[in-house]
Image 1 (tube, rainbow, N blue to C red):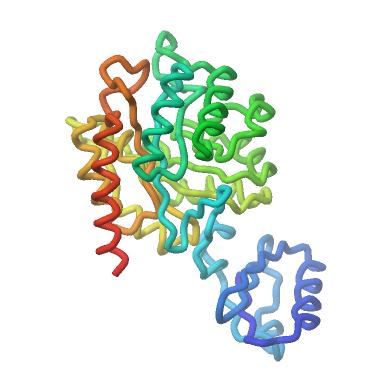
Image 2 (tube, rainbow, N blue to C red):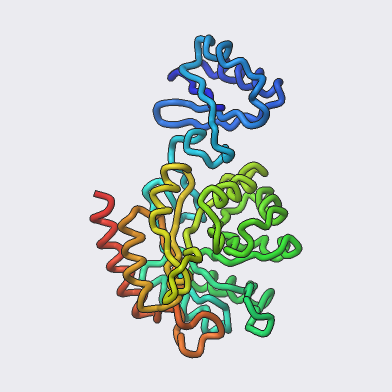
Length: 334
């Protein structure tokens, strides 16, 4: 349920209403927009007297929200959420470029790539230290050493770090990481999501391999219901009957998620396609359909990458793509 307040009401009256609603055992999510304030009521609202609340002189309207996701619902929060990572802003018209290798392999590799992608205009550095792999025999990442190398690259370039966390047990290792990524395989690891809700850190939440948009939003709800509103949604492709690409990039998810939710939505064309030459056209298409950013894999030597070299762009290819994305963005936002 949402309660829309009239403009320019006294703060004391608003506070009294909120206290009264909380006394009924309800959580109250407050969204202050440019033109109106919306109170999102979370909990058992079946016993709430809508007519009584509607009759209050400070209330403009009361509406029931039928969707099961509340905190990330645009009805609860009409204005776009802007997630800040240091000086970098994502969402609300702010576009973010995230780039780096699938896996951190060495100091020379990650620092060199970080410098290259920053020169090309990247805002954040991605790199995997803990790697979930389908085969137990594949490279699993440098783990703690990889995290330290990412911090070295951050110190060298100033780029904030985006890297994947796989387990609640590893949370302490990620205290100095800027953005925690929840990979597709962990999208419904609810224990992890709840713990990430207590961190306050920006969370990049990827859509699962075969999950619906509603399921993605419900996973975001787990994080937000635990107190963390700094969530970035990521469309990274889903399993379909397509047989030539790694996944099918569902770009229709971008405008649909923007309609349903106030959270920023970025796109990962690298994992979606699995083929480096297909990444640029899909990245441009993603920028054209209104995403809030791109996360793209870049490697200095893709044929010898320890993980996902086939989908990684070379630094010079990324630089060329970044220029085209900027051009598309100029047209798309007009």
